[in-house]
Amino acid sequence: MKGLTLTWLGHSAFHFTSPKGVTGLLDPWVMGNPACPASHKTFPKLDLMLVSHGHFDHIGDAVALAKLHKPEVVAIFETCLWLEGKGVQDTRPMNKGGSQTLKGIKVTMVHADHSCGILDDGKVVYGGEAVGYVIAFESGFTLYFAGDTNVFGDMRLIGELYRPDAACLPIGDLYTMSPREAAHAVRLLGARTIIPMHHGTFPQLTGRPEALRALLRDVDCEILDPKPGEALR
Image (tube, rainbow, N blue to C red; front, top):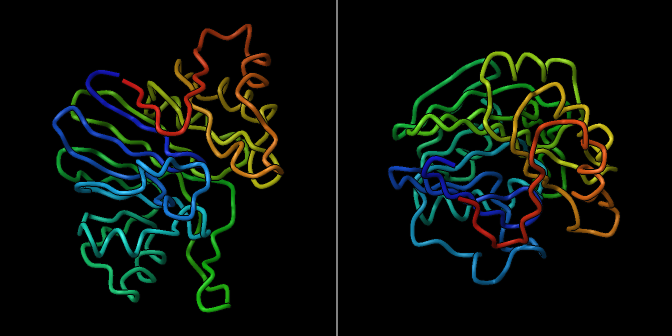
């Protein structure tokens, strides 16, 4: 992975250390995440945090961790406004199609096909739209983090425009793609390394990496199956 260390924390949360030592979290839900090992629920430092959307299982620890570590926090504009209202500093709002470079890492926000309501004091407030990210690290390694999504035809454009080396794709079904839809997403994207996510956390998330692998026997790609807390290098 050209110097990148990517650790799955269970569900859709990932910790990364970039080739130049920048640390970050993707979809920061760790404390209440039953799949996240206890040894991975705290961090010595965080430089960046990327939030795909406002559902509790993706944004749940964003406020607490942002206040503790003071990272630069990336999210869609409306979600950043909500975070700022909770006392989060150093937000870096953006929108789909936009890019920005943070600590030497280029982040591009792309479409996701999902909802984005934020549960706030018993009420659901507007959080903008759900998104995904294309993250180009200092070594040139490019990761597509899809967030929560269904398959959509413009994943082919993501593949053509950004040529991701690896893709983190949800496969759990019910709230996101199942392996069937995710297999089609892989064909659209053209990424050679696939990291399944958003599966196994709860009983109703029934999709499994082996099912995705079986659907892609004719495609030249590797379907990884890390355990929560396992680092990919």
